[in-house]
Length: 216
Length: 106
Image (tube, rainbow over the protein chains, first blue to last red):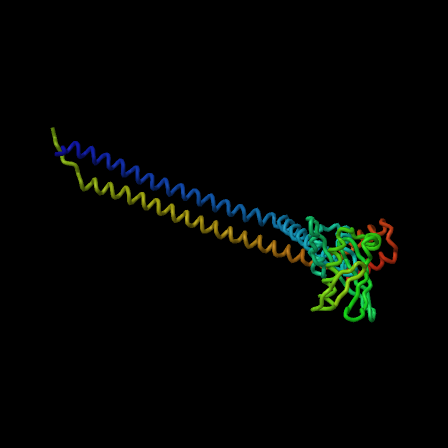
């Protein structure tokens, strides 16, 4: 059984522990209070700084929005001008050079005005192409925009059973007359023939001969 | 030797009072901290509002420049293209056609 002295000692220790726990509670609350006061001071200071520097902040925002506007307008004008130049017959390569614009952007605009990407078989090279038509009664011109090159080919109604005949340079005259590399001739002719069928004679077929494309 | 019994009642009161005082003090500090945080939140809200207003005004001012800037930038691009074509020795007629297609007002 515990003696009264022992009990008193235990009680003394418990009083001391209790006082320490109470002090710890207050210390924790004081720390929180100090942190909250610091937050309040910082928030007030930030507000005062913002109010004091309102002109400077405004100027910064304005500069930021102006730069963004300049960039957006630059992109928009480049696309607008590229489309206009492509529509009047400039090749994507020329347009890219005139506008100092990246090829992918011009290729994107070119697609929107009717150019299609063409893969050149056997190589990783690709180009963009577009075909337009100038009607002149029983015939007309097929205008081919092929990468940097632009050429015109005469076409006219053909004798039965053919329907249309597009005149094309023979292989030996191809480069001299079109400036398109001879290796790309088959792709260019296929593109012309497919475009002609799709745009002028839907549902018909074609064959490529030595100096003509025949639509039948 | 006087073997006096400890005063349990006083002991219990001391324990309770010490802790009750501490809790009261901590609660008072918490109330102050809460008031500080509420004030900080209010100031932060005022600052956000101010920044938003400044940004909004600046954006409207910049956007007000759109037409003038578009025309100016368009003219610069056209002038650059004209210079390139001229330097490349392209015929005046072709240059005029191209520039006509790039009229910034159209």
